[in-house]
Image (cartoon, rainbow, N blue to C red; front, side, top):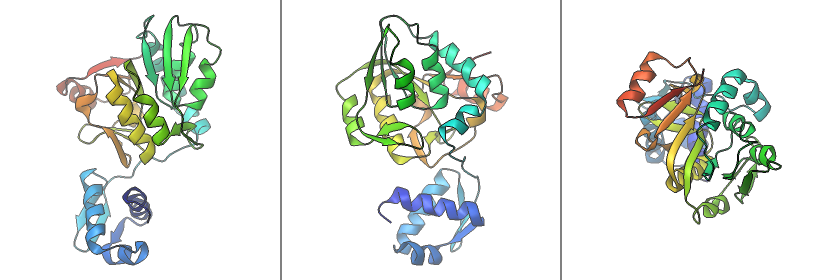
Length: 255
């Protein structure tokens, strides 16, 4: 395999399909050492996705499926629209913000079309299109490679674009949100870019519908100690309400 990310994704796929994996089989399949495979299994175990066993590992938690943009937009659409409208009220004239790619964050973009004196940077092609003719929004796109599955721009060029800027707020979309492991996404390059966004913004605001809580995707964006605010819907469980409070994270419910 070309890198550890691809290798672990392959192992996780085998775990999801079969319920368990064996080290010796993975060594033969992936052409790496047993030490490397055991290290990969330890990483998956640390994410709560697998449990190590003698000679292999078993699946603990199925990672969320990555859907296409139209599929994702249809899931929990009403909740996402309320979250986007709520988040838009946090944007003030003069703000410089980042809007991450995603279908919850595009709801925010729809509600910013009438904003005044706002600068938006985004890596989301669909978000850029939504705001392209908004008269009060100055729009900056990251450079980089377009990932068609998510309509997101990513890669080293996208990351380099961020380094010349400082932003007031980051509105971050996620694929998973776990109290222990943190905020996660499906794709390694997206996680890397999102982490750079976190570094360039003064306030980190996660936009997520309640279905994402308790889920862990393969790639961590950031741990919860970097998150300031979470905007979600009323479906959030009591466990996560209390967990966010204990972590010192502001919880806002879009109703």
